[in-house]
Image 1 (spheres, one colour):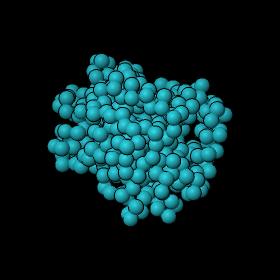
Image 2 (cartoon, rainbow, N blue to C red):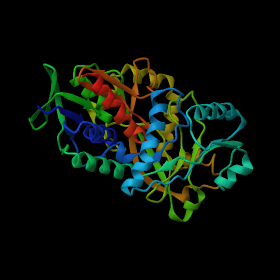
Image 3 (cartoon, one colour):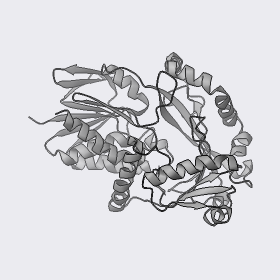
Amino acid sequence: MLDRIGVIGAGIVGLAVARRMAETEPGAEVTVLEKEREVGAHQTGHNSGVVHAGVYYSPGSLKARLCRRGVELLKPYCGQRGLAYVECGKLIVARHAGELGRLDEIERRAAANGVPGLRRLGPPEMVEVEPHVRGVSALHSPHTAIVDFRAVARAYADDVRAAGGGVRLGFEVVAISKVGSGVRVRSRAGEELAFDRLVVCGGLHSDRLARMAGEGREPWLVPFRGEYHRLISAREQLVKGLIYPVPDPAYPFLGVHFTRRVEGGVDIGPNAVLAFKREGYRRSDVSASDLLDVLRSRGFRRLARRHWRMGAAEMWSSLSTRAFIARARDFIPELTTADVQPAPAGVRAQALDPDGSLVDDFRIARAGGLVLVRNAPSPAATSALAIGEYVVDQLRAAG
């Protein structure tokens, strides 16, 4: 009898897992289940398109290891499939002397993670890389790249189908039950499917799917909308590649930065505001049940108490283009509100532990023949092929 393997979620991580399984176990029957009518519809299709080099992550962490391995796999894959892969480089800029110690720590981490080509730059060298940027020092990662991750996800889906697997669109899972040594799932339409092994890569709904499977809800997922502005075409020359801030460890999010897109254009952002719906890409998107879900979370209530000032500032920059651009002017002083226009937003599934701390590393759990990708924030898209390897190894360990 064929080994039946199900993967819930046709984002880039779920598709990479299914691709790896179909590739390494040709006798298995692999099926991806996706509630939307297209692959990569949510976090995959709304991210920045940056192929991260592994600069920020704690050495030895799952993020650091899988990010570096992911880059090693993704770059040649894009070349083989004819997908654009542009090494435009990233400049991490210290705006003032108070950020130099944190920049030193980032440089240490990046070196420990094996990020290639790193250079520490002073102001004269910085403007050779980014002529319009201002700061006191910077770390340059020349091999940080950009791609179209939705196109990459479509290619992974094609690979799954070519290997004999299936991608079932419009299949929203509403129930998961363990039956003997296997797992059964039911769709909203009432269709039931049985699997010997199941991988849950549910993105913004991973915690809910875990609870369906009887595995407990923590860490709790809270949706944060990241809003962007885009440089008008006449001002795109202000940015050549990627310009990032030195993150402040006192706050949970990275902050506004500049991102060149592989399909053209330069985005500025994101800020980070609470989304009132799991897939709330617009301010008008509201779900009472999703919002109540957030308020029930002990972790969110503690996070909000701890960082309410930052939250208020993020909300103000959401409402005021002038406030949003004022933050970006710290890096490019000549930028004005007339230089930008609104751009599409994304929603990040931010996992929180009960104490209110953000789950920073990837969190992947196994329970018998069930694997739960509980937390896969950035750089999950970069790391997807490596996550696929890791998850398949977890499944094999389950026997």
